[in-house]
Length: 578
Image 1 (cartoon, rainbow, N blue to C red):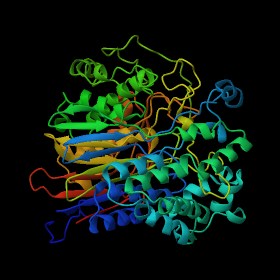
Image 2: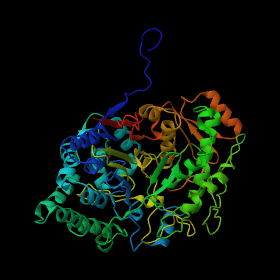
Image 3: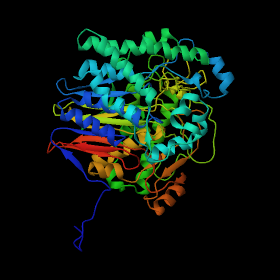
Image 4: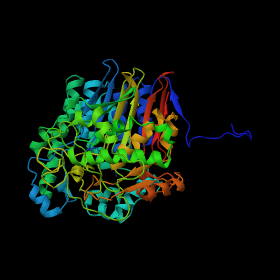
C-alpha cells in the first residue's frame, strides 16, 4: 500500500497462481481450451497439444497447422526432459542452383521455400507417447474455432493488413484473409472453413480406424503424410513448381531426442538441439553466470551493456557454428563449457561496446574459427511477427513447452485446404559454407526455441516467446528477472526489455545492423544515452512493443510448490492457473 492508502500495482496483470495446474499461451482462447482439458483430467501433454493446434487457427498469420512445432516435455515420473524435433527438412528434389537463380543472395519467397510440415506429426507423436486424449478430443477446439469463427482482434488485423500485398498474391490466401480485396474489420468473425474441412478429414481417419488408441493416432498421421491429404498437398506443389513430393511426406517422422542443456547455478536449462537457435540462450547464460548481475542494477546502462554483449558473443557463435546436427558438427559441449564461458566473459569490455558483430570464439571441439562476409543494412530492425508459444503444467508434475510457427503470407496456401505448408526455408542460407546452408534433407536453423528449466532436478519453469531473433533475448531477460532479481513471474515478463541486432537476421535477406541495440522507452533516457556513449547504436522503441517478444511462462515456486503462470501483455497472450 502506498502512503496515501491506495494500492500501488506492480504489474498490468495480477500474479496468477494455482495448486494443481497452470497454462500460458499466445491467445486467451487457446489458454482456455488447454485449461478445460486439465479440468477434465487430461495431462500437460494433452493440454499443450490442444493449445498448440488451437493457436494455428487463432493466430493464422503467424502459426500454421502445417508449420513447425519444436517441443520440450518434462516427464515427472521419469525426472527427465525429452525433445520432439518439430521442424521439417528440405525436400529431396531441392535445387539449390534454382534457388540462387530466383532468389539471388537469399532463398526466394513463394513455394520454393517450402520444407516438410512437421507440426502435425509432432502433435500426434506427443499425444501418442505421453497423452491420454484422442486426436478428435485434442483438435476439437481448433476445429470448432475454424468452422464457427472467432473475434478478429487488432493484432491479427494488423498482421493481415501489413502483409496485404503478400496475401493478395495467392488465391487461397486472399480468399481467407482478404475476401473482396479487403482485410476484415476488427471485431468481425473470422472463419476458416477450408481448414476446418481438413481437420475434419483427420478426425474421420481416426474414427475409421478399428484399432486401439495407438493405431488410431497412427492412422491420423498416415492420413496427413501418406494418404489423401498428402496427395492434395503434393499435387498442388507439383502444379505450382515446388520441390515437395509424396515420397518426401511418406517417409516423414518426428524424432524424439535428448535436448541440449546447460547448468546455470541451481538450474539446468534445456533447449532443443542445434537445428534451432536455443543454444544462444544457453551460451549467454553461461557467459553471465560469473557476473554479479544484481550488483549492476536492473536495466542500468552497465546491466544492459553486459547482457547485450553476452548475447552478441553467443550470436556470433551461432553465425559461425550452429546448424542441423545431422549435417554440421556443432561443438555443443565446448560452447557450453565453463572454461569457454570464462574466455568469452573476459572479452566483454565494461567501458566499450563491440560496435559490430564480434569475431566468433574458438570453443573446444571446433575444427576452425569460421568467419563470413556480412551484408550491411540500414534503417530500423526488421519486424517479423510470426510465431506463438504454449506451456502447460499438470497436477502430476508434467510440463509441456512448445513454440509454434510459420506464416500464411509468404507462400501459397493449398487450394481448398486452408493449409500453408511450412515456409521455414526462409531461415536457410545460400552460401555453401554456411552452417545453415540449403541442402536436400537438411533442416533450416530455426528461430523458434522453447525452453524448460529444472531446479535441483525438479521442474522449475517452462518459457518461450515469439519474435525471431528476439526470442532468446526476451527469454533470457525474463529468466534472469525471476532467478537473479527475484521478480514475481508476471512482473518479470512485463519488465522493460531490450534487444541486440548486431548480427545477420535469421530471416531472408538476413539484414545485418552493426552495433544496433533496441530498447523500450521505459528504460530511462539517461541509460540509453550512456549506452550510446559506450558505442551502441541505440534504436528507441515504444513503452511495451510486440517487437520485444511476448513471453509466456509457468514456474513452480520451490518453497510453496504453487504454480505461477504469466503472459505478456505486449500481444494477445494469456495465462490461467488452478
